[in-house]
Length: 444
Image (tube, rainbow, N blue to C red):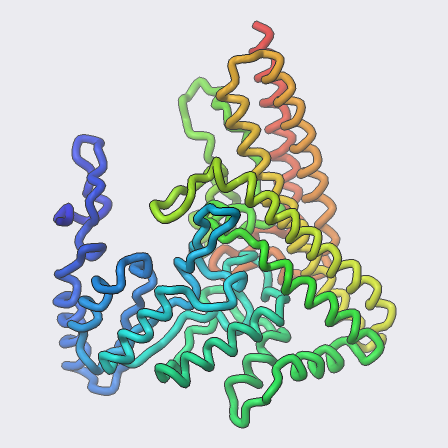
């Protein structure tokens, strides 16, 4: 049964109704809604392409999704997201993919089953693949420089083409477009004749862009960065938080010292004309729990260990690239410097994401403690963490000053440029004052 109301109206006397809303699951009325839209479109055009994106329903059992697809008009297409809801286990915990990420090179269970069902029913297939290089992994970068992972994804997409006829791709969300090595690989893979080895194509691209002498080190760097993404964390709180805003993401002291009883969430400063802007950045870091995901207090210690492995590999790649820079010819040097800036941006974002998980654990421990001495010790840990994170943000400024594309995304506009990194430093200064105030409260 459903609530019979819109999601926003499904609250009675302040109590949320936990049943699904119509149009969610179960959604037996949804095919009639789609048929109504289909009829209206076909009245005016028999050539218009009508596509239903089943993005939000991938967590639902296969039999329910089959029931929906089986009732769609046969001249429609179905758009299926490649990796969302893919099961991922970390040391025995459930940590599924929550949104677009190249950390998942293989498709998710929803993609595989939905493609098979749609193909069986004779529906045209389309997939959200983000396959020109950008995902929500790092919200404000032009592309994710992990080419060996993209190569693996492209191979799986070709298997889907051969098996189910998947030939339509949604290759960028609202990230925009930027020339990069992933586009070169995608172009080589999607056109005929298709090369036998995309790794060889990558080697040619690297020699073209960075020169023969530097190519080996650059490829080693890209291999490290590709391997680092094995340890990436694709949770909602991270992709709507530090991964999205980078090292400009604020660190909010979570005890609520207030006379107004307001929320500690703050509005991230974005341009007023931004399409989404601050609305897709959640500043009060906390676990966004999900029925298919292990709780945050269990996940965070293990995710920190994962991210520390990611950080080590990413930093190793940066160091190899820095060794390669003097070997790059003068007329290609700008390519290398910009790649280094991109690598540093992601490196600092990784530090921020590790730090914010420690930050949440310490804030939670502080508020659960009944021991004054323990609380004082935690406050000092928070101070040191805040100061380290402030420096992490400030150290990134030369990289974002070098390349104005870093820290920008079309739907948010700038979120991690020099101004926002300086804003982060000011925000942490405010947080440090709150910590001092809280310490005086312990002495009352």
